[in-house]
Figure 1 (cartoon, one colour):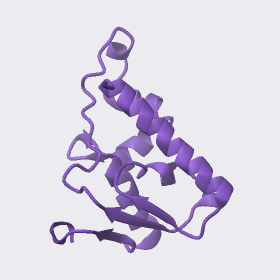
Figure 2 (cartoon, rainbow, N blue to C red):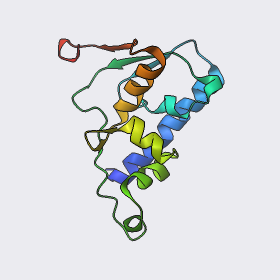
Figure 3 (cartoon, rainbow, N blue to C red):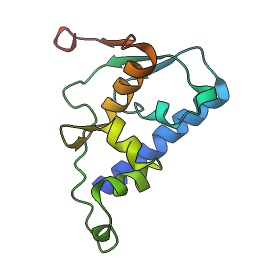
Length: 132
């Protein structure tokens, strides 16, 4: 099984790869299914930003990953947000603004905030009555 650091690195690479595909393929809309690639819009340049539809399949989980476990010799000297910034290859201010919810790292919040800013909140839907 993957350690939590490897899980964070996996999701970092996954989201950056999705963003690269979006930049190259230039679709009309990005259909983001849940938290797995919810950070991808953060990697798009202003010229390649596009409308997003976010569908919540597992809103109970939300892509929350505890990050206080990153505590080996190197990481002990680096602040919590800087650790995430280094792993996800984004600025600390981006992590703080888009990925922190109730003091915890949350990948789903990145896409929700992006949609709120760029689409006035339009484009989020749930597949179950509980998520509506």
